[in-house]
Image (cartoon, rainbow, N blue to C red; front, side, top):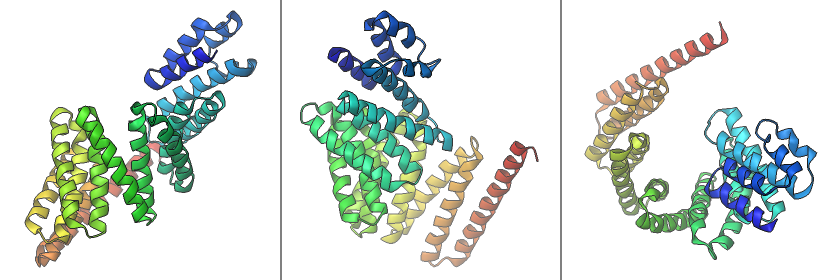
Length: 329
């Protein structure tokens, strides 16, 4: 049974829940095998089993729901992610699978953060951190998950004004992600994410040279990523806005304007796919308004403020129309 538990754990982490279920079915006794085949159609079959077989099937089921629900950003999807992930983490702990316990705690914590439940998310992240620090001592393949935890904890602490604590977590996450990206470019998006997070913190704490260096590196990485996958253009636009904010603070107005205008062009293009991006368009117009005010060009500042309000009001009207149409009003 220990061998099967290890195989199921490996397949859940490195494959799919379906792979794990097939492995279980291949080695299960006949009475379990027939019930296991019906797991995804009727998860209530778990209740008809006892002991380790019931726990393993439940783990496979909730692992599947955790991964599936993580694709959605709706309230229902996020709640499903949290419940399934934390249930899977408890089952993994019961079965003695610390690697899965840590991974599902991480996934559940991300969902809790999206729900605004930072205190509960922090508890899950800290437990995952403890487990992962032990795991990486024997297996460095868990460095990716450890860096995820460190990055997310860093953000939580920065947002709750524990900036020194947040900085320590983000700097450790950056060190790990940089090392991972040097070996495998697949980690570049995660590296750029932490560069942006830490640069923003350095800006807020007035370490402008450090912030400039990290924003510049993040920008270059995202430009490289966009060449291969246009989906990263949103991340590029976010970094451009953050970098622009730094340049505005240090009074490099020409560079700030260039960065903001490129971000504005990106978000305008994205509105062709989804009207919701007009919210970002309005934000960047507001940033430009503030920039022109700092430059002493008050007419231009007023013009861009007016444009921002117009875009925002148009977006509200369109969203209201959508809401009324969907409700049948």
